[in-house]
Length: 425
Image (cartoon, rainbow, N blue to C red):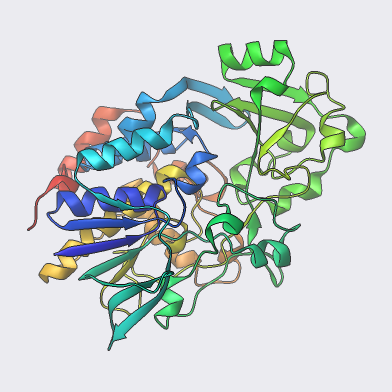
């Protein structure tokens, strides 16, 4: 049985792992020369409810990539405004480590390979067309193409293409596979008839910062600097993808995190104003290159799906990551990917599809985000274990805990321990 995964971000890599564990032959197609996509610019794990979610994923038998990020963390249990016990993985070391993990499992990686169209037979995708004209068939397909790009979207809904980590000009635009197969995409909004949202942070070359800031980043993992009063821009918080950082503190302060580079927690910040701040006089953006003007626009390509991650209207297409909802974060991508990869094999075998129960944060966020996607108001929010609306919900429902034994017991009680480790074929 052959599974093709389109997109090699965190969700695509996780889907590949669970599909492989279930017994399928797995091929990942990635349009660029690197895996992880936005994961190469991210780096924040285990903050707030993500700690619970990460441990649920481990108990469910899909902790492979959590173990990789843990092993490559520069700092552990760091608190920064509105966030507790965060771990920061090194964005400059993580991608080769994930490549090694996937190759050790005999998962085939096809890099610099872009899918541009599909061949359909009834409600099934029969095969995919590559940008070089080649045609490839498989039994089940999983789309994890994300929701950012092509360049035209960033021009239309943002401040223009700022050459983000997705590198559309170099490797070509993202193509929505579900749309090519005849399923209409859903879009996230940020206000009335304004679609998408800006990515949430920028990367600064750490070497371009003042010596005392570098020292503090290396030792503590976080630096908070005051923004000059005349440069405080509260309106900018509305455009951010990451609503867990859309707080007053993130407008009034310059918050830098050490993820190998210096992660600046704002969607963009004019360079001349940035360089007014002590210690940032020589600051240089490295991603997006035009971080003084803008960032990529996300959430313009979400597939309608069931809570089993199957795309509605197609019999053999599953989705995960941002393609599957208005999710923010690596942990969220891994959870949706794990379920999509596992259910792809169940679907092929004619087994009932697994729906994670809402007694788990992992199951609840998948169902809750799906419900919210149906309303205009819901499409203006983003869903993450790390903050904003969903983390409040986690706390209210008693789903947030740091007690690992408690999480293991809950998963065991649901008879789901190591479910994603099961060989089905």
